[in-house]
Image (cartoon, rainbow, N blue to C red; front, side, top):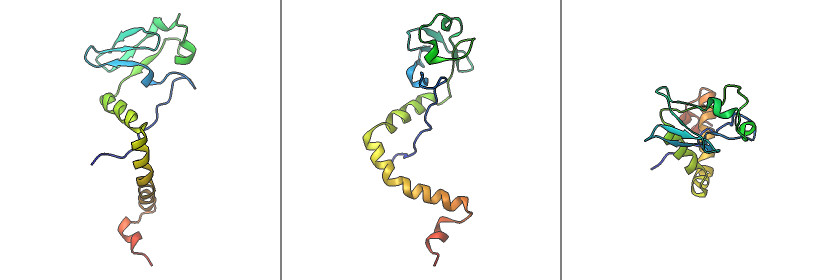
Length: 124
């Protein structure tokens, strides 16, 4: 059995620009490499700051609006989240998700209305 939960989509810092999945995260070496090939260290708080590297970057408009440069914030389970987004992009996942989604949506609707799913099934 595996989870059939669609991961939250990434929002790029700039509309139509680079998202976290466009950056290469190396957990072993604690580094992040941007799409332009610049590599920076991940600090103990899980942040990779590109700072001054962004000032002259030809792709800055696709990456950040910040004058201080792009900062990547990594979640403690970022590796799992990346794997979930990759899985969700497969046809097999999409097929399974389409089969399960109607019941999931119905259950959520029941819960929002304060009903227990079992009670809703047995209503006249």
